[in-house]
Image (cartoon, rainbow, N blue to C red; front, top):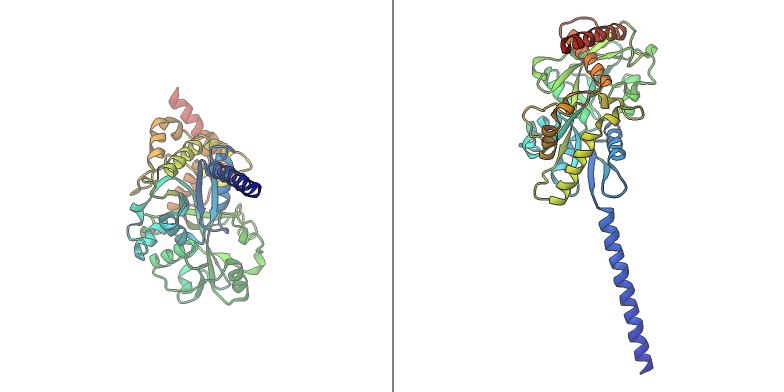
Amino acid sequence: MRLRFQLVAAAAICAATFTSSYTATAQQRATDNRGVVELEASSAEGISVRIAQDLARLVDNGATRRLVPVVGKGSLQTLLDLRYLRGVDMAILQTDVFSYAKEQKVLPDADSLFTYIAKLYNEEFHLLAGPGITDISALANRKVNFDLPGSGTAITATRVFNLFKIPVAVVNDDQEVALEKLRRGEIAALAFVAAKPAPLFARLRGDEQLHFLSVPINTGAADVYVPARLTAEDYPNLLLSNRSVETLAVGNVLAVAELRQLRERDHNVANFVDVFFTELQSLLKPGHHPKWKEVNISAELEGWRRYGPANQWLQRNMQIAKKPAADTLKTMFSRFVDERRQAMGGDAMSQQDKDALFQQFEAWQRSQSE
């Protein structure tokens, strides 16, 4: 009898311990998942990971909000992850991946499946060639590296060469491998979409005879890409101080999965938007990526639907959102001057001249308000 009592007592103690442990685990699980938003960056090589990290530090309050960055396997796979992968709430994507997914019938209705929170930064298209190649047309039927299949570079390079109607022999090597092949003359050029100055080109020397090719934007590209320039300020070892190379740039967007039937996740993303938009100015300070200075959260993407809570925030705070900080306005003014002079075929303006012109603009702006 005593033995039976002891066994029953032991079983009761074990059951109580298990219940207590289970309850504690469930509570910990609920705490750890409170306010979590998962953001996928396209790859580790680009700046989207750094941008995601900046956002994670901004949002995380240690209790009710947390952003978890995830590294994807290239732009196309990241787009598919945003559509199908459980748990992915948002993604940083090149804008041209949506057009590419429609053209290739990977996601024929790609631009209607997602909404966007904000247009982010631009990344420049670099086309680095070896000796004897002086023009993009000279790459016809030559080997050109497009980076790994499905990467942002592969998508942009494919669309750019198709728009220029220049057939090339596509190579899909990692960029470091491709750079060594270019040095040995095994390929004619490599394409790379990256925020300038790209670390890949930092070690290059002028005596290696590697150089950037001009990629002038044409009518067919103007609906997706914007004019850009590579200058000596970006790549002092490759470009003379009075030389620049015109190219194009592709925008990046913070896109949102379809969450309307997933209330908790939708609520978490809405909270993220409120913090991101409200605290955006803090991301312009030193210690964050300089590309944040290109972000204008009120900029619209033609043909896209804005994520509901983001649109509502902008409606409530329209004047604040449209008024950029002084440093941001100066950066935007500088880009405007560069793009206008490039479009008109003029030479690049020095930073000193742009600063002087901006001061004149500020004086004119003050006189208008007076």
